[in-house]
Length: 296
Image (cartoon, rainbow, N blue to C red; front, side, top):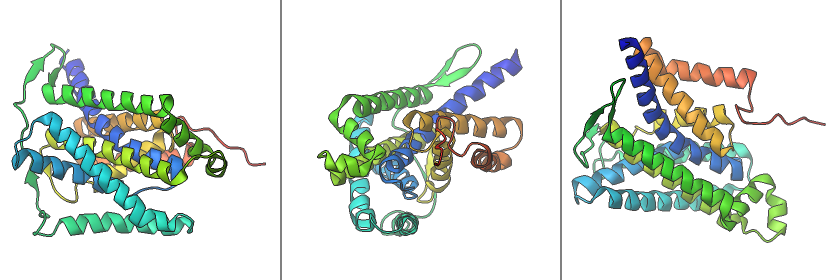
């Protein structure tokens, strides 16, 4: 009975971590679906969201709902600026140029924000926006932080689903993802849709940054590197460019990481995630939900 309870507890912990990865992975997969670009600066937008939330809570004492709104707006603005300044001028350049630029933007954000005049390269304790409460459900324990992560992630995914499948912007995004040139001929504003995609992806990353800071209350300017890489692996696992694939991939990666730490060793958790990436690239490069494209 204790073993079952322990396993169920790790499942809850894995879903908690996987939900954060899913929010970040959605930004990767949306940008790739529209622009065929791996935005490696996306993990640093996630980091920026955590720092914006830190200042809003610690310096201004704002309530949680305002922290979420203002952080999403701030990250959306950063995502918009990154797209306009770094990526738009290179839209017709070779893909390797965009990839190098994405890495450059990532390094710029990390080392610029590590300046002592702005933040610090050291770890900073994330403030508690509310008291943590624990609920014993017999077989496992769940906290109000975990409930918050589950609820916010579900609401975010539901709103994203409505946006993509029930609005004109969502139809335009799917049209651009399918065939950019044809969508342009049909009157779709390509520039606006690409910017809108970056805004939505960056907003979700900001939400992930807040939830990560609340759940794992230590942040620093390099905190986006490994979650960003793991979220990218989650997007590849689910099928890069596929929304529900990013969510499923994020949950799988989160569960794998937690189970490896719980039953093997925490020193192996990152290595196992990369083994999953190698296995996917070798045996199913299109991902779980991706479709194989036959070349004629």
